[in-house]
Image (cartoon, rainbow, N blue to C red; front, top):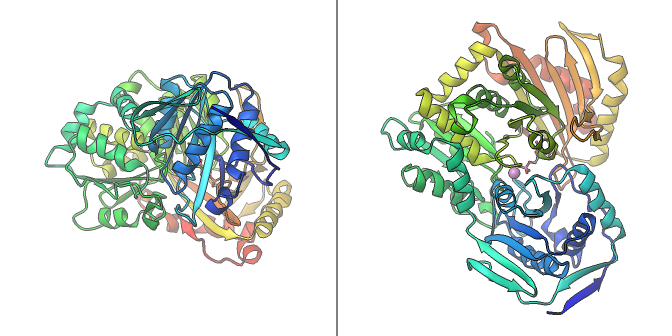
Length: 544
Ligand code: VG1
Ligand code: CO
């Protein structure tokens, strides 16, 4: 089958961010744009001859078109074999599972996660390595370098693959295996959790739950696992049909965007348990009856109850959390006498710790939780983990969380996002904070004293790589913290994220409203960064 070599010139800004390259669909659709990035990825990886690749995406608009191009380029670059999800669908955790299971050289995941989809929405792509995890910065930097130098790409002239048809097809010399998107992932979940106990819970008349797939990729996975395998009544999964524009919604599982689920769980006859996932299936939100579990608390609670889960019953090696995630999990690690690690934002920083078996559980405040079963965060896994604990302990979500706070204290936590801030303004704000850093330690604000102020730098204990400038941290005596960083996943202007945390262990102060409990610190965070003056914003766009 003939292969064409096409001349091209570099596009500016093909720099992978927190989680791959994310741009507007209109940017990706420019002639050669996707091709340049794919060829640059292959160039950065070196010899692709005879290797195996996994390809799949979250089903958003442009997914299948992009996959056909990628398959032809993979063939032209010498790959021998590609595993691709049926209709081009693989959730991010399922892609990680498939890469590991079939020992592929790596995978291309097409997703912009919860960013809006559709012809006017966003598209994204990232490369995961053979461990199933997002490529580390050493590789993404090389890819970026290649995008700046590219002059040609290679593409096969073979016909399209029938992505709906399960089984083996060939594309020139390369074989393409179209696989069921759900089977391998479901099997993996069954090896981790006590499906029998969860089934007993989900079929009991004393328990009801709702799972909101938000018209994104998790629908088929949730229907298969929760309804078909575990016996939850039909209708447990809502918005379960993936749509190329996610139904016009914003599949970001939080109190703002998962509105339908939140309304139901906070109603008078709310179900006992509610959960939602995001565009590509790697995030999770956990709700009880009229009760919200912060992702930071969720990580700590899963860690403290890991012994109830078959896969973790002999103990967890350690816990890692991203820097802005609350310190709740650290207290659990301390009690268990295991390692705890603080890494920069983005799942790629957990990979080395997981591979070296230094940690078993990982989490981010941005509704991401996962374990060593794959190398991505995993939405449904977190939901099953919670259900397994509830099934064994016969407690409600609120009881479990309150009990945790009584034992460990509570880290009140909130994140304030200011979206669509002009980039220069956002950078000036970070600079304004940066210049204050040396003068802050020992300074007193009300009854708080600053104990450290820095721009977080991470030294990876496994490969000794260093990631600098990962966010401004202002820590106070007693553990309170304010953190500021700019998002690395947006496609329009800048998003300023302000993370605020305060620890409380007085038993009579554990049930306050979060924004009230944190009001002084929130005010201080606004003042220190001069947010109103420097951005013209007096209220955040989203509070989680
Ligand atoms: C955000 C979150 C981060 C997460 C990343 C990818 O990044 O804060 O914790 O890892 O999204 O998640 P940023 O740079 O915008 O803060 V996902 O579900 O978009 O793959
Ligand atoms: Co996601």
